[in-house]
Length: 336
Figure 1 (cartoon, rainbow, N blue to C red):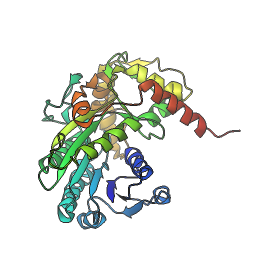
Figure 2: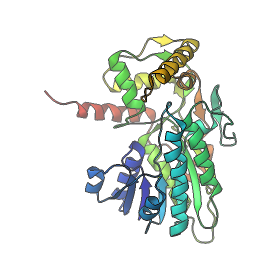
Figure 3: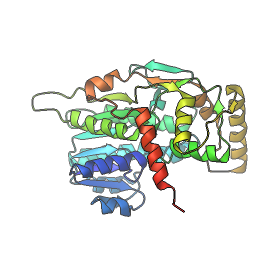
Figure 4: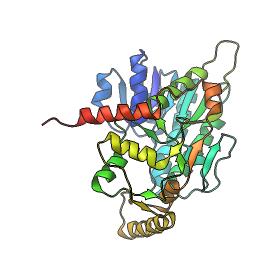
């Protein structure tokens, strides 16, 4: 039995479907029930990751864990991120200890090393940032450090840092680009020339399953990936506008040609943050200072370590992924 936290999410659900397709018994722990997962034969446990006893009960009888669940976003109270991301991770580690679970694959984020400015071709030797402008990367950094520090003879752990996961049914990057494109509210920050990398959903799943395999070495050998973190991307850095316009084209929308300067975007982000605080709004502003910097800078990574230690190779190219996305979106449109 393999435990997956956040099985109803985009990445978690894709991992669950792949596990079930190859015949693995799967249990998911998540806040809400999922008839779709139950239809696949998944044992669904409805609980909050911040509930230690519930997490420990859910892990009973499991041999490995994919800890995928997290609260994401660029806005919100620190405590709202801390509870699922840090406390939830502590509880998953406690469950592994109680039940003698030997392998844990943790989904982290490249944001844990983002200290501002361009990130161009860096590898995992770059340390975790010392300061964060928002709660999501701060809490994910703390969680990643907990997971890697727990690696040892009793529990082999690895942290994966997938960057900008996208594809069919993606509720984040893909859905937001398409929604803002349809509403005419999409802008490139700068000229959209900064290089970024991403990862298609199938490739992200491949990396997770490979990581679990590499955490289970043959008798007499050791795991090359245990206790380490890995960037996971397409290995195809491209100008930001090309990926955005590729998603728009897949959705049958015209390319984005309007832009805003990085300085203006940062100013707008600051104004919107202030307004949201004064109004007590809980939803995310359309722009924040952190988001403006993310959109105005390059983000691409050296994935040599993942290729070497995990035997990871992105099987689906960006071009092929966009074709699959377009086909999925066409099929989702109701026929008249």
